[in-house]
Image (cartoon, rainbow, N blue to C red):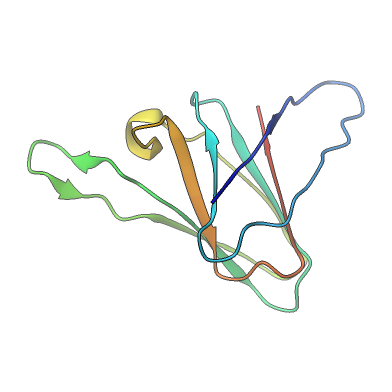
Length: 110
């Protein structure tokens, strides 16, 4: 699993540095609740990004389903912010795993 460097969103021309997501194990970033995930799908098919929700619902200790986002062919997806009480793990990180990583580019901004 790779840690993603968070990039600032600025008013001037902002050249984002994109990475290829890590296959199988996924990627993560430290979440303060003000980050957005940017994904560019340049592959030949739609992909899904699954964002883990380690939180439990109410006092019943019921698991909350992970958030699954579909990114179509050629689409650029910007999702977030990610509420800390739902998406942060014990290390204050959000974890995401992609169904495919070939021709997928990823950045996290705040």
